[in-house]
Structures are given as structure tokens and as C-alpha cells.
Amino acid sequence: MKGDNITCKVVLVGDSGVGKTCIIQRYVNDNFVENSESTITSSYTYKKIDYKQCNKSISFDIWDTAGQELYRALAKNFYLNASIGILVYDIRRRNSFESLKTYWHEQLKVSGEDNMVLAVAGNKCDLYLEEKVTEAEGKQFAKDIGAIFRLTSCKENIGIEELFEECGRKYLENNNLIKANEAKDNKFNLNDSADNADGKKKKKCC
Image (cartoon, rainbow, N blue to C red):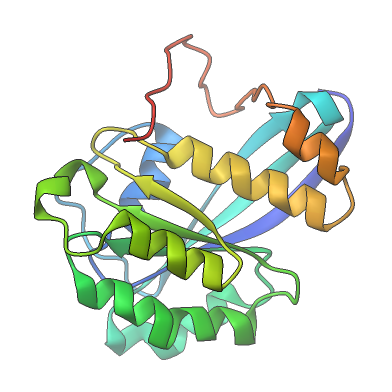
């Protein structure tokens, strides 16, 4: 696509086991591993998406950070100067939600860019029968910190593409790369560069 190509650093933070790695794997490679190993310190990948209507594309540099307390001090180095921060919790684990409030959000505020785009992902929403954190609570927390909110499921591929799409759109808006009304009025047709041209219909969020 001809037009502006922007590089944007994205970090996913949250407690160990909430599904940060699975979210990235589903988004970038469209696969799901049931019992993936916990990330040690960090890992990196990328994906480029095109926002055709505004003639822009974003290369997401995506960093997956360790949630274990042992590695938290090291992980801070990997989300310095991040433009987008995605806070992930497991809807079945209230402690993973509370730690977003008491630890992870504060870390992003200290280390990220001043106008960082924030998002809250309530992951594993396919397991809603085991829910310990309601959707309303997740939405309220996101509202309180000025963040995007999405329920996500890596296993069922729910809400993940929409999460990154909305983060990218908000980033373009915040940096005056598109107009606010353009962000609202246009539903961007995304042309993912990571071999996502199989024509499959995307699943709707639960």
C-alpha cells in the first residue's frame, strides 16, 4: 500500500498465565497452543496492518513481557517508550485483575509514552461459566484509566484482531495522523500483511 508507514511499539503486561503469549500468537500467526510456556523476561514479534481509508499502515512491534514477580524488574526495560500498552487479565482470576490496578497500570504510566494508548483485555472469555471478574467491572476499570476494553479468547479467536485494530486507530488519532471523526465514521478495511488473506469470516465478540 502506498502511503505512510508508521512503527509503533506495543507491550502486553499482566500476571503470569493470563494469556499474553497466546493473544500474540493468535493475532500474529493465527494459531493457539493450549499449554504454552510462560515467557521469561520478554519476547518480540511484529505485524503490519493497513488502514486503507486513511492511507496509513502501522507496523506493530509487539513485546510480550514476563508476569512472574521474579522477572518484573527486568521486564520494565522492555516496555520503556511503548506507544500502546495492553493490560491483560484472566476473567477467572480476580487477583490477576486486581494486580492491573495495583501494579501493571502504574508501571506503564511510569515507563510508557505520555500519550500512550491503553487497552484492557479480559482474556479467556470462552470460560465465562468460571468468571470471577464481570464484564462490567472490566469496562469500569478501563473507563477509569481512559482505556479501550475488549473481552478476548485465544482459543475461540474472539476479540483479538478487533483489540489491536482499535488500539492502532486510537494511536493514529492521538498523534493527529487521522481526524477524530474519521476514526469514528469509517470502519477500516484491514489488509493484514501476515498472510491473513484466506477470506475467512471473523468471529464476533462474545
